[in-house]
Length: 131
Image: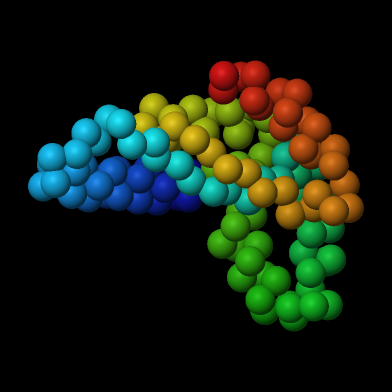
């Protein structure tokens, strides 16, 4: 919930700033497509999500070290990150930011080179629910 609240505050603040600039320049704020990028880890269950996160961290730790791997996990793959969780959790979170005006989401699957089943689950269950 903390990451959700931070994301909501950030989107609201950035949108307000963008709207102010648009007003200053006489640009139609509504004509701008607002987007964001998210690292995505998805699983059918919360336990599967945690297993996937552990696998990702185990894979990168030899290259970037334990401290940086943990920082990456904490910043990008925490349990309340917008695009980390079960399909239902991700749909709920992305719907909330969609309601704030986020029109376009770019997702990155850190495990894609090793396992595409998360992409397939996202495609099968999240995309149709957000359409």
